[in-house]
Image (cartoon, rainbow, N blue to C red; front, side, top):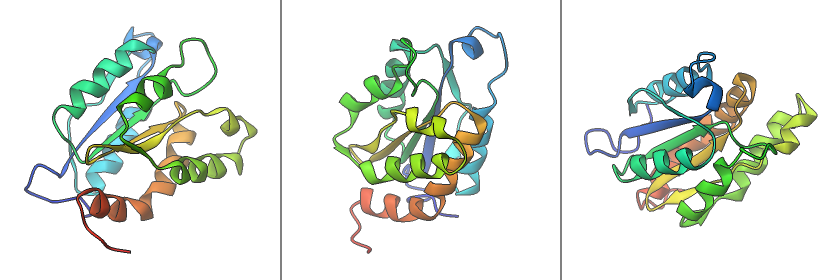
Length: 166
């Protein structure tokens, strides 16, 4: 378990899925359960993933989650080049501090499997003391991103909470 501060409220996390078709019920969301399960494995309390259409609804869902001051918020989808792929655009203004190395590592992990990973425009950073990261919308892209985050998450949480571990 690596939740930030179990029992303090800083052991909660949220998941936002940006997918117009999943939000409309055209198909079931596949990435939300993967992310939520991974967060639970790391000791976080996680509600059901919030599935919203691409674009402005993603920003509204992020703001609603951030108002609850979770330790971690993970998004999936809406990071590409489609005109409706606005997840990075609505995330960036909410971040107080970017952590570009995380997204560089996530893209590098994806590039080892597909050149399409270069098209991801996702961001990672801190909104207050909440770590926010934009993952791609494909299950394989999510798995690549979570594999990168796996060894980093405890340290991210410690530093975001004000710790000085190195």
